[in-house]
Length: 344
Image (cartoon, rainbow, N blue to C red; front, side, top):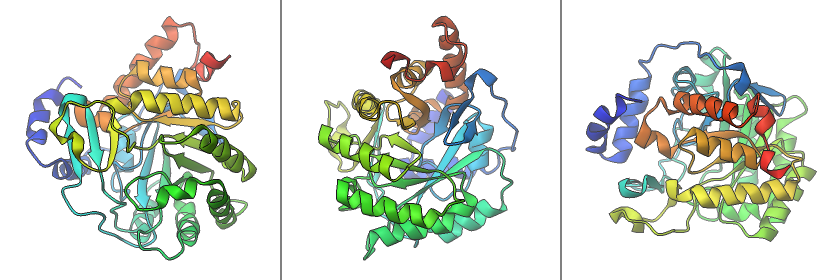
């Protein structure tokens, strides 16, 4: 954490996507060390034992190139993807923008990835140490998106500790329409059938740009289809007041300006579900205080993405240390005791 400010100017002198690529390539040389997590941070979700609630969100390691390197950096779990059945280039460049004055990022990638077969082969070769989830999506030109998700479940289930159904990206036209109740029910029915009785847990990732009726419907359908957890949330297409010159770029906004909206949506989903479904928080989390705020609001786990660009790859370890100190200060023996504390 102390050294990253020395490196950051060189990275920020590069195009954002190029800097990201260099980071992934650099992590390939990182020694694979078994991380040590304080047992007070352990959380169980969907039958999986997470050693720490601090995880890596999808979008960082799209093609599952370095999940074990991120685990070595102190993440309690890593989510790779989004992966589509067929490779696709995504949207034209430039498509990733740093909003430095706002500690934010705008992206319009459009599910660029090398396809599920490529990632599956790589994941199949790794030792199954540490929790690695796989985030799946549909190809942009898919004639039947439900069939794409079902195919993704079938393809990636053997190499995934959990699967995330991503219907919340704003950068694939029409994708968020799958959050409508009838469409969502048909989608999740196909996903659950493709997983089978012995497949891994299935999580659903939702957008922050939802109305109260949407939230109630999503919780009802997800519960009826026995989805194991909800990830709240993805990037937003809304624009709070921003100072950076790139604020007008199209795409999904993440980072610090998303914090208030993502926290409110988490509270909304916690209220709608009554605590019956595990929740995973993402969006604007950059510190131990941010993590504990989401946990007390009802999240069992949290995920990082944009804050890594500003604070460096060791952020997960730093947040874990802050989180332990805050648990002690607020009288929680374990992080599990703090889950939903503000709702009790």
